[in-house]
Amino acid sequence: MPDPPAAGEPQTTLWELAGHELNDPGAVLARVRRPAGEIGFPAGPGKWPEGNSMNGLLEELACHGFRARTVSADHAPELKAEIEERHRRGEFAEEFYRERLLDIRSSFNDAEPEIRTLIVVAAPQPIIRLIFHLPVKPVTLVVPPTYQYGVNEKAERLLKKCLKRAGCRLIRTSLPLKLLAARSGLGVYGRNNVCYVKGLGSFHRLMAFGTDLPWEEDSWGPARLMDTCSRCRACRRLCPTGAIQEEDFLLRAHRCLTFLNERSDPFPQWTDSSWHHAVVGCLHCQLVCPENKTVRNWSQAGDKFSEEETRLLLEGRRPEKIPADLRGRLERLGLLEYSEILPRNIQAALANSASSADSLLEEYA
Image (tube, rainbow, N blue to C red; front, side, top):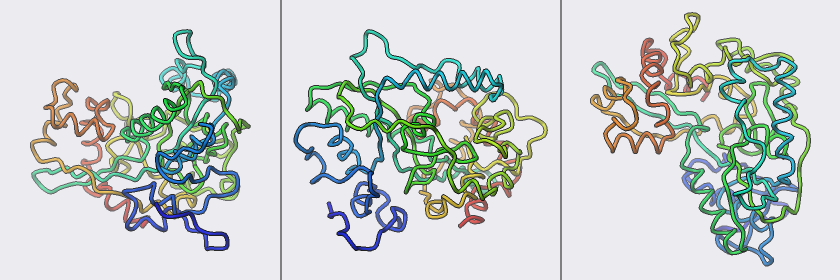
């Protein structure tokens, strides 16, 4: 792996190197100067510094392309408490609270190891372009970065391997990821309620784990709004549904296309087919955001679905009724759990041929 830039060399962002190395984010990050206070670079993958320390673990993650922060596990109940307080003040739509926030865990049970540290991780992720072949013509739709689950398994395998050397364990958590990332200092909120990580913008996937390895730096602090948002209203102006608010980073969730795209109900009558460009989720506010100007063009060609496969998807079959090969591809894309709502989402986008994601991506290129 290449050495980090020497002192005095020009700093390079991850995305300026994107043209030929994005399939290996670890190799890219090794050429990017780390900001003061961020995690550093070890001698190479698998060469964990002496002492099996938490900082050494973070360096190993950085070497493989991840960004991470650690906080004491004692803070976990504060996440739930903050959500409940905001709910008490009426800041969440009741429907959104019941579906997404009510059952969030904030502690660990007795059957789990003595969890001392929470590790919150951001993995660089591109937009994935999918092509659906139809009798008339192929249509491109996208999967936003946050829906690709395969990177979770990669991070988990790496963490388990490293922690095993230290005689420690790792567990998955079901904590509120955006809030945890913001409170840990790994990220900040945008006005669009999306989490932004330095150097990655919003093109990443968050994950969190607990371990009994002691933390060395507890970076816990208040969640904050990104500085850029104080002088920018781009996402609010461009949001087609009016979901983004002026005064806070909490959305009108019942109007957000991402929220609507993840539910099985029919789309409200006030939605327009021209707004749809993704098989799940939405990218309007992220593509227009100035904090994403160096990453918004990062997309990769994904799967191509034949006419027969597209027809099967439009049937809305339950996962177990989908042919094994097609089911595996959906699972790799993070879409299997949405298989029963894909017909509605795809058909909404196809209702207007101009809603193909190609035109949207070209608009912000």
